[in-house]
Structure formats: structure tokens, C-alpha cells
Amino acid sequence: MQLRNIAWFWKVGLAAISLVLIVCISGCSDIPPEEDTVSETMIGAQDIPEEFQEDADEIISICADLYEKAEEENKLADLETIRSIINRFGENGYPAVDSNNQIDMVQAEQVEGFCEMVDAQKRAEITIIDIDYLGGFVKYDLQAKEGNVDVIRSYYEYKNGAMQRNFIGSYRAENWNYTEEGYLMFSGAYYSEELYALTLSEMEEHTALRVQPLDETCRELTRKYLTPIGFEQNNMFIVDWSEDDFGELNFYDMYDILYQKENGKHVPYAADDNLGVGAVYRIPEDEFENVIMAYFNIDSKTLQSKTVYYSEDSAYEYKPRGFEETEYPEYPYSEVVGFTENSDGTITLTANVVFPYSGNSNVYAHQVVIRPLEDGGVQYVSNKIHPSWDNREEIWHMPRLTAEEWEEVYGGE
Image 1 (cartoon, one colour):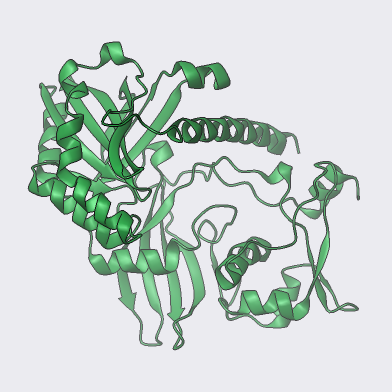
Image 2 (cartoon, one colour):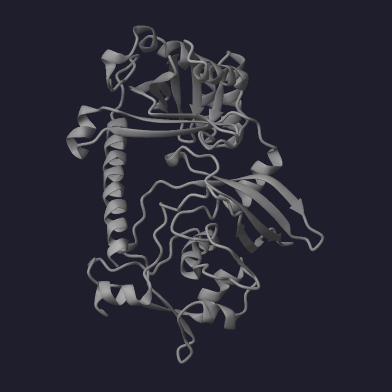
């Protein structure tokens, strides 16, 4: 328990800081801007060249009409809307990509050239636009000198019928890497008086921008089969398992995720309001199995052997994740880079795991076999990690408590 507690305190502490940052930034953005003005929170303004503080109107004019139309049609988060905004920036000479790296970067050759100048320790500068799915974008102004890269980060948001710049900060990239997989990854920290007063720390940023194009079918397979599962509070893509041997796959975590996919809402069996009390439920057999068996070819006997099952009640025991099982909210994501359609109707997806927090676009690789169903559904057949000497530890993941750990924490209550 000692090692687990150390990891838990580290992750929970960082999670609490992140929550405060999110609340603070969200609160600031709720203040309506004055008419015909640009709302800004200046961070490290003394380090930002004047020309980068005066180009807000030019950037806004490029895509304001597209945002206006998207808001009218309620399509600010629509993939094709994002694509049109990216293309518009590209037509105006700016490299641009989306924050989820689902659309090929435009003007990518400019970014490649800039990275070459950084490697050669020459002077260079570039502007890159990173479109998000919340109705805004980040503008990165990068300046290179002697191998160092200074970053000026401006956030533009479409709000109250107008595009505005409401945040700007600067930092020197502490980590900078153009990876073999075609990602530009950099990170750093910048200072904010408001946030520092709450957290006693600087604001950290970890950026991952895919520069190299990717096959569109690979992207669609990622969005359809891997992204809905992800890496948050589950081990589906970090352990080896198959229909013949489900290994250490945690079906309680899968129930949490798949219940929401099936029902459009979170599992109703919540943790106790008292953090010192461990909640325990018994879920009727049909209710639990219908969720799991919609996505896995598994029989009742096997599922019962991988969980706690009460035959006298025909029910599965369920313990919701508690405070001890909180994860640090920085997660990687899988990206399909190749696929094979198999003769038995299954598809093998080869994916790299991209982890912006660690500045790594290939923390490890894995293969996921899926079985598309005639009704449009899917069964997950297996996951296999590609062994490699440089596979990284899954520092984001906190497993559910074992039975022994649960008893120790909650004292059998």
C-alpha cells in the first residue's frame, strides 16, 4: 500500500491543481467583452514583442464569418466546420491543424522548414494555428534562436457573436521535439498572477501537433473504435487480452464506460458522499451482462469468474471508484496508423499511443482486433502491446482497489 499511496497523493495533488486552473480559466472567460474591443489577460506581456500584440484584428478577420455561420447552424464542434476553418487559414498562408489532430495540417512544409532551422540553430519564426472544438483557436507565434524556441500563445474565442482574443502568454519551450511519427511536440510554463495566487505554480502547457498527413480511413477507425474507449479509468489498451484469455482486463471499468455509451448517461451507482465509506452495490445479472456482452464475445460463466458474482441473488457486486482511485487527468490517446481486414470479418488496427504530457508520440504501439457487427455495433476481440525496450510506464493509470486494499481503506464498511 505504501507505494500506491505515494502515487495516489502525487496524482490527486496534481489533479486538484488542474481542477482549480480549469475553474479559474472558465470563470475568466465568462466575462462579456466590451463592445468593439479585444478582451485580453496579459501574461508576461513584457516579454511579448509589440507586433504580436497588434495582429488580433488581422487574425480575427480571416475566419470570423465561418465561426458566425457555424454558430448559427450549431456546428462549432462539427468536423467539417473545423476542416473549413483550417483550410481558410491555409489559404491565407498559415499552417493550421485541429487540436485533436483529426485533420491534415495545411502549410505543413512551413513547419518542417522551421524545425530544420531550429535543429541548425538558426534564427527563424513561424505562426501556427491550432483549432479547438469549443469555438476558438490557439495561435502559436514561435521564434527560434540558437536552438531555443520562444513561444507566444494567444487564445481566440468566438463568444457573444464575435471573435475575440482573450488570453495571451509567453514562455520558452523547455522541451522541443519533431518526432519520427511526424508530430511537433513542445512544452513550457508561463506565469499568471491570478492562477499563481490560487495554485502557487505556473501554468503548464504540453502541445502535440501532427504535421505529417495520415490516411483518412485510419482517422475514421480511430474515431469510431478507439477514441470512445480511450485511456481514462480503464486498462483496455494497456494490457494484453483476447477472447480466449481476458487476462487482467477490468470489466468494472469497462462497465462504467460502456454503460454511458449504451445509455447516454453515467452509471447510476455512485460513490458514497462520505469519502471514508466505500459504497457497494449488487447489479442485476441481466443489467450488467447486457452492457458488457454488447461489446465483448464473452459468456456468463467467464464474466462471473472475472468479477464478484452472487448466485443467490443473480447479481454482480459493484464498487464505484472512490477518492483513492483518482487518476491524474493527463491522458494519452491511440492513433491508428495501419489496419488489416481479416478473412473472418475482423479488422486488426495498428495504433501508436500519443502522450502529449510526456512529449512522446509513440509511448508504445498496440494492436486492437475489432469485429464490426451488422447492426453497426462492434465487439472488441483482443489487444496486444508491441514489446519494445522504450515502452513507457502508464503513469496516468490508477487501477481499481483490490479486495484487500478496499478492506484496508474502508475497514469493511
